[in-house]
Length: 210
Image (tube, rainbow, N blue to C red; front, top):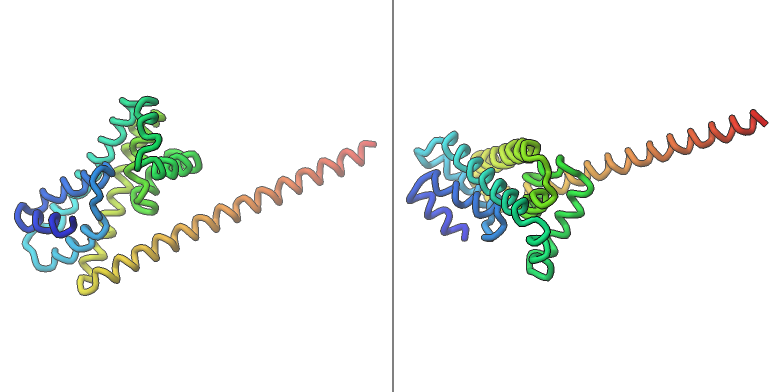
């Protein structure tokens, strides 16, 4: 798949990346979009194609793919969800549902670059739940821009070892995820301690009033 995308890139230029990113963000076609972006970023060293043009076509394709999923989910609603049950996409939708329940609209932003494997399926899900379109679009555009610019920049800077870059990106993703999990745990611990303190104060006040 990646060879096909790169051949299209060589033949048709940056416009080919629009279709690659669109297909990847719908989840229908298994396009290894992160590796494609890293590789294209490296190729920018030896091509006359503008980096700005590549970035614009990639972001446009990704955002249109997101909008496609959102619109399909919103139009299909419960019937669409029922058809997914028992399908090969069901496990990914279950993960997306759990993730969405935890993060809400902000989850759309994080799923563009931090937990990107569930991003395409989250598009359908938030469409079915009728998340505000403007909020979805803002989170989608911002997240896609960060993800695409980051991958293209890494590929450009470290073009000698694409495989290593992909591994580095995965490690960074896990590190950021671990940091977020740590902050959440710390926040819950602080909330628990604060609640315990309030309960103790209430107990002391009750004792004093007797």
